[in-house]
Length: 526
Image 1 (cartoon, rainbow, N blue to C red):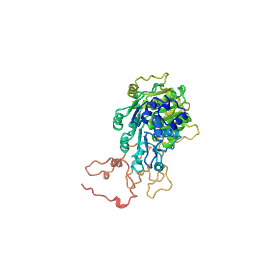
Image 2 (image 1 turned 90 degrees about the vertical axis):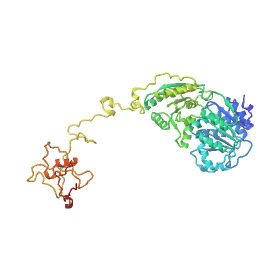
Image 3 (image 1 turned 135 degrees about the vertical axis):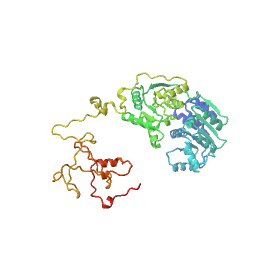
C-alpha cells in the first residue's frame, strides 16, 4: 500500500514524495486512517518504526482547515525531552512546506520572552515538554481550552522521568471532547492505567510485541572488570576491534559517568562528544548535530538519547552501564538497526549486573550471547588505565620505590646536601646566639662565674607572655633532673596537673620580665 491510499491531502502527499518515501510503515499504515477519522489511538510499536510520521502526516491534513487564535493552540504534542521535541518540529518543517502553519516549541533552556511572542501571534501546533508548558499556563500566558488534538509521545519515557503527575494536570486543562493519540514502545501497568483514564474507546494498534528488540540488531555481552577503569579499558579495546564501525552511541546510567567516559576517550585520541541532561541546550544541540553530520563518530550519552532520536545510520551501540530497567535496554539498542538496516549492540556486564541482564533476557525473550575474543582486563591496565600506555612511568618497577619515584641520590664530594620539605631524619639545629641580647639575660658561657651553657627557653606558639614555658629537647647527654625546691610543691591535697609536673621537673623559669602585680601570691580557697 502507498501513501495515496491513506486519505492524506495532496499537499501532504507532495511533501512525502519530495522526501523519497513511497511505502508507509506498519504503524503508519494502520494509525493514519484512524487519526483522520477523529478516533483516539493507542499505538504500541518499537522504536525506529516511524511513529512520529504516523501522527504528523494526518495532523497536517486536519490543520489545513481552521485558524489559530492568540495564546490558544489548536493542537498539543507532549514530548519527554528537548531533543525529541525539536525532532518533531523538524518533521513539521519537512512535511509542511506547502502549508502556512505556525509551529511553536516550548522547551527549557530558551527565554520565556521569545516563546511568549510566538504564543501571542497564534499557534497551530504546540510542541512542548511538560515542565515548561505548565510554567506558561501558571503565568497566564497560555490557554489550553482550544486544543482539538492531544498527542502524548513516548509515554513510557514520561513514566520513567516522573512526568505522569504533570500529564494528569495537563489532561485536566484541555477540553474533554479532544482527540487523544497515545504512543509508546512498552506498556507497564501504570501506562495501562493512564490509557484507561484519558482515552475514550481507543483503537489499539500493536505492530509488535511490547518491549521487543529490533530484528536486525546483533546483541552481545562482554564481561567487565571490578573497577571503573577496567570497564573503560575494555570499552577502548571494543572500539578499536569493532568491525564496520561507522559511528556509535555509548550509553551510561549517570550523568557523572558520561563526563568521565567522555574525558577518558578524548584523552586517548578518540573523536567523541557528550550529551546529558545537565548540559546547556546550545551544547546539547551542537553535540547532536555534529554526530548526525558525522563530524564526531562517537557520542557518550545518558538515556536522554535513548528515546526517539531519529539518527538514521548508527552502526553500533555500546552499553557502558547495563540499564537498571529492562525497558531502557530496548530503547537503547533501538538507536541502531533502524529502517531495516543492520546494527550491533554490545553491553559491558560486571558481576553487579547479573540480575539486570537476567531481567533483560526475560523481557526480550532471548539470551544475549557472549562476544568472541578475549576482553579480560590486562595487568598493566589495572594500575592506571586512563593514561596512554606509552606514557606510563615504569620507574617504580625498576627501583622498587612507590609511585615510580626515583630513589634519593647521595651528594657527591664537595656538593651541598639538598634540603627536605619535612626534616624528620635531620639533625636538630643548635640555636645560634642573636646579636643584641635582651635587657634581662643570664651571663654567657664565656663570662666568668658561669659553669654550664644556658639553653634558650622557647616561647609559646601563640605568643602568650604569661604562659608557662615548655621544656625543650636538648642535644646534650641526658642527666637526671635536679630535685624541685620545696616551695614549688603545692600544699593542697589535690593531684598536680601534668603541665605543672613538667614545670617542676624543668629548671625554674625567669619571671623577671613580668609586672610586679602578677607575681603577688594568691590565697587558695578550699
